[in-house]
Image (cartoon, rainbow, N blue to C red):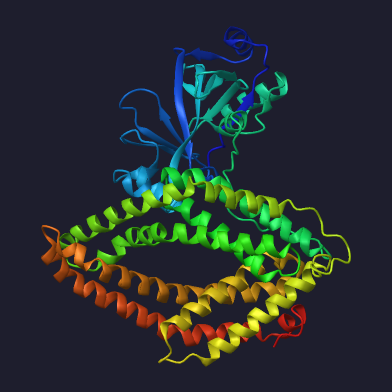
Length: 519
């Protein structure tokens, strides 16, 4: 296996000429032609490429391809029109799309920073003049949006040549031991993003954190509400620009989780402020719902038509056009709502409640504030769990779909409590419950998603009939609706088994002990 490439940091006072003189004294070098590189570095909002060991670049200049770099693999390139974002499904078929699709999923590849570098290619050569190690001196600068430049640390990169591992090791020894060059503490991408005020690892959408046992409930709630409003605020710009569907999804999840904190942890906030914020968060969640539902419809379009003959799938294209037009109308409403003073007031009230000072001891109106979070959250977990087990056991094959939907919502409440505050309980009690909930919610989610899809598609039949090719699309839609209803029925058929497994996990003694005697 070839050795890994290495980046070494060059002393800051040295210019290109001084560095060349220093290297020429100790290594037999061939000099390449100096050049300038001006490129934009890209990643997803949550840093998926960096986490996967990938680097995406877009060199400046008309027609420059999108480049994807990965250690141990040749560079992949794709001719992609310039855009504010790139979704995997929008990339042309080929190596870049194949590599990025499972990494990005529904996230977009976004410009992160622009870096302009002065480069000096070099090669360590042997007695026959053959290249045995590739070197490159780089003096990079961060280029801000307004054109301002910030110098970044100069680097010397070493890249091995196949079959010359010993020469590579010797060159590295000379550079590190004789010249005292140290490995770069972080990749150029990280340094550039930090210099631009960003986060190299992307913006996290999770809020789980370790809470010490005995943490006051008002402090625990404030911490979680603060983390959740941070997530919400960070996703609003991407939702407004429609960069990818996950911005809106993560905004909705943060709102739902905040509503759950307010609903389940009672007796710790001012009752009027809590009630107002709950109402306004409910409004905000309703504001985001229609576009999210249509996003799901369009994201699942390949699956919707995947099993159809090609001619039938083609006949359904007018339906996709109708869905996209409706999404456009709903997005107009969403943007108006997200830019409204009402939404801004919701975010201010959310932040204000998260930043509220600790409740004084003995406050009769907020009796749970000073209690340890494990006591308050444990009681709520036990009660929600008991209600889930009771309601789920009452369901039968003839039960109304609304009952399954209600059970799914209750499961979300329980899961949010466990995810946000589970760190104060034994892991061996929390893990089986969370795992069981995930399995159960997959079935309940599939049941509900298919119900929403069927309802939405049936509502669109009138609009579809007015399309030029609408009648043929309506005929093709019939088997699709039948397939969706069959999938919904299959999910309902799986429910009993998944619920029984969840019930067995909930009945374990360690679960009962952790959450206040719940059986």
